[in-house]
Length: 314
Image (cartoon, rainbow, N blue to C red; front, side, top):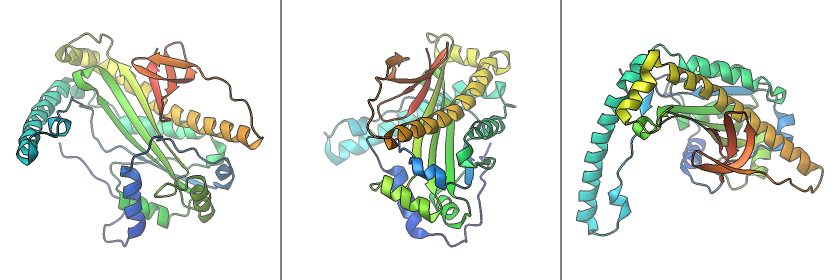
């Protein structure tokens, strides 16, 4: 099945080229701390928010462990590097084909699952609890590039653009269902652009906020082979997969609101002068270590070293 692509406007439109280039640099650039806090005073300046949720894929897929021998050793010179690259490419193609075969029964079992609709419903519901955001209902897109983001920023009458990009897949060996949501809030209003620039002067493009949220749901029996795991994920019309995806769209939306509220609480405390920060509990679940943000009897939301939030099984 070919992937459907939606665009926001015809490509012939003249776009702000300089901003497009800076957006590409900011998206591909690396930082030791991924999270960008939203300034407290920016909340008072936000009058309206354009919410765009991007889900490029049409269906679930399975990831695989990729070979990278060409990057693991500097020996062999140019010829050696070319040979290693060719070997890696052949191996990765083979593994990709195997992963695609493995996930077929899972795809078939949830063919009627409306991921985008359910995600949109959760995003709308969760963001509604943030009155300062004044958000409109989210719009779902299948694709968006840096030029389109730049045009959204340049041509909108809203105060901010909240852009959420979501991916969902089964991890190598079909061990876990993983949802990843990357959220960026761009200033559109001139005053907010100034605020963002002052708050984050090192950013290539002024950002009011950025963070990534990861939801992990393991296969009930992690000791199964990949073929056996595929049967578990697809059993009973994909009952376990559907339940995990329902929980996943809720959790990534909830983590966004929790993170924005946490940033507000920290800014409120900071505005009142130096305060003694309470010790945060360090926890480790499922191989992930971080500070505890929230928990239920079954799940914990933890903040890892670079600021991202993970929702993991306890």
